[in-house]
Amino acid sequence: MMTAMVIGMLTAIAVWWFLVQRLRAKPWTEHGVIPASQDDFTSSAPKVGLWAFLAVVSSLFLIFTGAYTMRMGFAHSGPMQAWVPVDEPALLWLNTVGLVLASVAMQLAYQAALRHDFAAVRRFFTGAGVLSVLFLLGQLWAWQLLSATGLYTAASPAWTFFLLLTAVHGLHLLGGLFVLARATARIWRGADANDRAGAERIRLGVELCTVYWHFLLVVWIGVFWLLLST
Image 1 (spheres, rainbow, N blue to C red):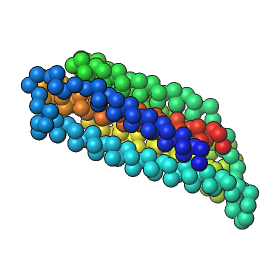
Image 2 (image 1 turned 90 degrees about the vertical axis):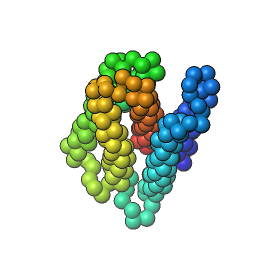
Image 3 (image 1 turned 60 degrees about the vertical axis):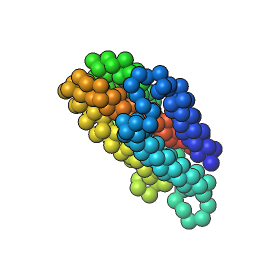
Image 4 (image 1 turned 30 degrees about the vertical axis):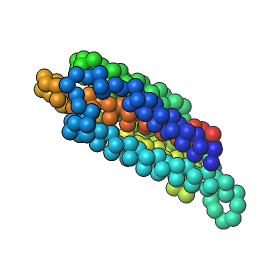
């Protein structure tokens, strides 16, 4: 239950940060932009969709966390399989550092997009993608290291939860990489950067990817803390 509260608090902080950034924006200072224009509605719709999706994903991980905590509480009662904690490999720390760096690269790409420095956006976006792929490969390697010990089987509840939590998080990151690859290809073509509307589409895409990567980092830190604490 405490872990669920921690993840919920971290998610709330991320939402608060996003709202603060929106409140700091001053659209009335931008010449030629009508706040209630169709362009403003079009750019806001993907953001609303993303945050609705993040709310669903947050609920999913909170449910998993609650199930994990409840199952661990019945570790030595009844006919259930005994709870044998998973000895997490040190590789997970290295993977976490990689995901942190990917999130930092995303933030730098977003800041570059605000400056219309699309050369820097390409560099940071590509770097974030490479670091994210390395994170996923590192997670698979961690699975292999633990499986090779022979200490964990499919009947082990702690091992099953370890696979479930890391796999679901990895699948969400993999989906993000698909969107990131499409956005990166568009940025490398550079055609959209030649006009104002195209540059705005690039900026919006970078912003959405940045928010998503920050969210996945927060979720992973919560999951990693849960695994380490039990």
